[in-house]
Length: 235
Length: 235
DNA sequence: ATTCATTTATGACTACACTCAGTTTTAATT
DNA sequence: AATTAAAACTGAGTGTAGTCATAAATGAAT
Image (tube, rainbow over all chains, first blue to last red; front, side, top):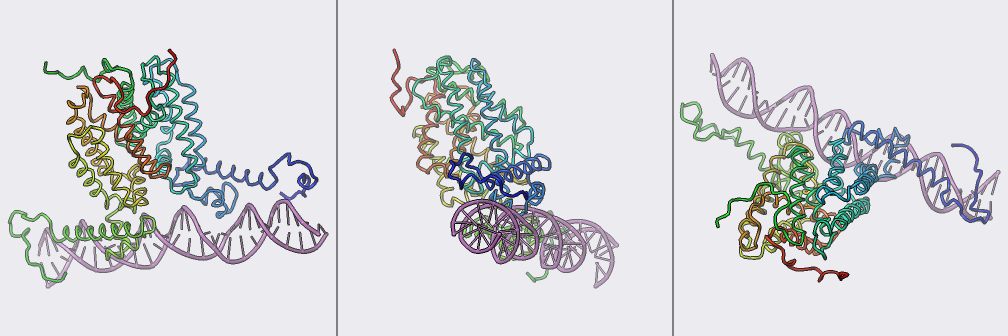
């Protein structure tokens, strides 16, 4: 805090071996403290119950300083959980059983995401609310990159399973990734809004995914797992 | 406002021909004024730029009274636009050309919804934000009923087109409705968040819908409109 | 007409996210 | 060491959503 300046590499013609000066490091440490404080409080008391005052106090900074590091309280929410969500997604894709049926693989991935949100439903609601419609442009790229990871992850899963599952050649796997994620996401929202239980959500999700995957096959002799043994047909 | 009481049917043993007393009517009129004031101001100045004070003033009520009629400002947003959205959806389903290809019919429906949101993007963002994750349980049933209308509407479109489009028998059209709407919704969000232009959104949406519909057919000899004539395959 | 219980209305008040004018810290320059 | 410009910090202040104690209105009962 108050020791005199000791290393000043910039002046003595040396190459900037450490491009991070004291200033940068202080800023980074402060940011870390802010994010840690926010994470703890959000997890402990919930998003709306946590005040920016409390976060600033715990991070040992002035109330105004907080807003030099995050544009808004909502911004802070994404800054805090973005990495965790990316990590959760990547881990989910990494852990997937590549030899399981495609539907199961997708359910593993989405199931991991659901499990993540299930740990703290109020927080999940706040997060999804903010991610879905950003309150400002600041975190736009963060969300984009998360989406890219998910879309391409799903694309990979499909590509890997292509031969075994008789998936048609020439389909745009990113497009399919977007579609399947859309199916998941709206179901997730329904669950988070309390329109259905987690069980019902997951069961319905599996049915929708199975149906969608069937449609990607070269031919569809019969649905893989018919929910009902087909209606009586007039011959 | 100040005329003496003239008809008091309740006392004189008559059946309650008008179950709405003065009280009820006053409440209804006040609610109407509130909704009209909110609608005008939201449309004129935008959601976040409108204060609850202004709404109360224009509706000629006290600031506290407003919150007897709406639990929150967000609540008010849904109360104001719920009917409009339901109307938009129902009209969209009614106007659909039942003899057009299924993809076109769906695009007509979703296109009408997009056109509705396109009239005022900031407002659309606020609306979708609130609908997606409700800030309270008050409007839960409103959203549910809107969803039911949409899901069953899509289901109807599919059922109607079933024979002509070679759709498999025995599929759960509500399930498909949910899936297709999910595909639309996440695309809509991407557009509203500025991740893509309206054109790109609609084009991509059509591709996803086409792919999904193909999957519902009895057999898939060839994709209806291949985006690219299949990659070169090593023989 | 008077009383009384219940419903509805009100605006001063509170809590909180966020701003900004003024201050302190940093580090470059001499 | 002194000077200075730029960057970072700060907390008192501001605007607004929402609350609540109190008041007014209503209608039932007598």
